[in-house]
Image (tube, rainbow, N blue to C red; front, side):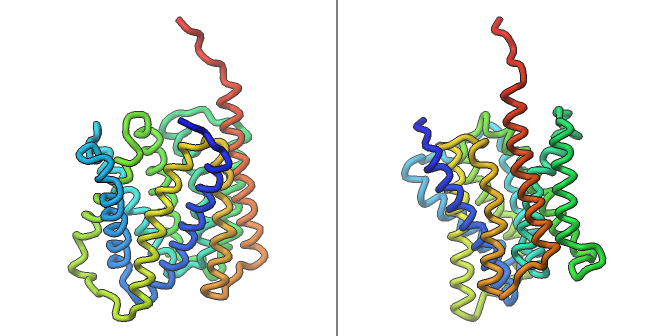
Length: 295
């Protein structure tokens, strides 16, 4: 496989721009379109687009998998992530929500230590604590965002952290394109179940355009990520993910004329620094860890 770190970085930035656009447009569309209808459309678009693009190249191998049960579980977790994202954006500004969502890698560290018994250094525990402190600065206990609705973005973080842990285990045996294929169709199938109660297609052309942009940016973003990790190592790409916070702030300002206050900006910066540092520490520890001698 040909490595090209600069191309990998460019693809990650493209993916992050897609995801920031997806979140911004989602917030606009769900002001008038039911969340479940928007969610179904977004996954149906991804499923159809992935199948149309990859079927001529892969044919029947596109759906061959060793663990259908894990593929379904992974698709369910990502659907839950998207559902909590859409619902969170109905009451949270885009930038603040994105920053809270960015504590996901830190939660992955926490879950890996508690559930998988992985060793985590004191410094990485400090980064986890710093990330949660940044979250508190954003939601500001007693402020406008402080309510039971905060369970939605926190549930999103937990669902996505579980999704990432499962994905890290599956990539050793499953093809990334096949995983993307199942993600789209599992999400579409599950989102179709309650669709009868939420079937309310848009009545304005601008809402249809918004739905198409959501489907296109969601699909393109995931494709860019898949190819980015083929071109560069995760250690090179992971710290760049925190650029999405700035992109989301820009989207929120352009679409809704919203800018975070000083405390929220400090929280966003703290999350970005702690998250990127934690990723760097994880790579450093893996390189310093003694390797087993060949037998």
